[in-house]
Image 1 (cartoon, one colour):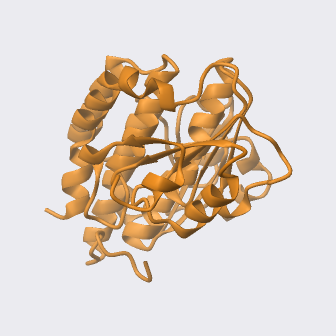
Image 2: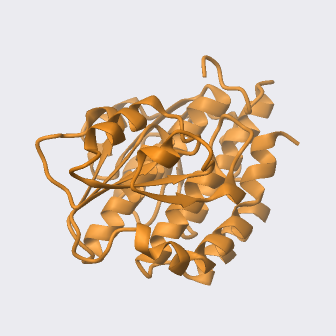
Length: 285
């Protein structure tokens, strides 16, 4: 078993532990009404996008998300939350240094003994979700689970769905597809982007992600037989029929979208295995 397989299978346990500890971390996390920005790079940025949408639509406060390298310094926030598994991400550390003294910052990391531990005002450590694989799985989803629980949006049903995602058969025929498109709406757009990233990193696949309705405005033109189009969450009316008309495979989301991401992680590993690739060591990373 690869590291990434072992780590993605540990997610239900990690999520349960994180949700149980949310009160312990509450003071370091955004308070209701604060104006907040989430920042990160790659996977961490996509998790930030997801929680930003959840937080704002739940009425907890105005919330944005940015790649750490693209933070808009002309805007003012009550708190900036940085997600960084390693605690050494250069763009995150540079941003935290620039914000020090005038914007309160929180870092969520897996390793407290790294520069981010002193670069941020507040620190949340999820060390039991740290990873050996370059390809992130459990840290990112555990951080998102903690933040969902902080918003009162996590339930035991999410963990049950994750266990289902680990035991269920992958949708038939997907391992042999040549191109993968993931779609989302609202908070699941970030999850769709993360699913596509997992496919690119682990299996060197042609993978894309879009807000579901934007998919119709151009990207659907490259959809054909051999394409898998996977919806995270509820699909817009008529979209499944439009996709099927191209000859592509339509994969509806049936689980909690975060658990659906676990299923997509498994697909990335399975495609890597079919192609003789090591998913723990993505090319050029």
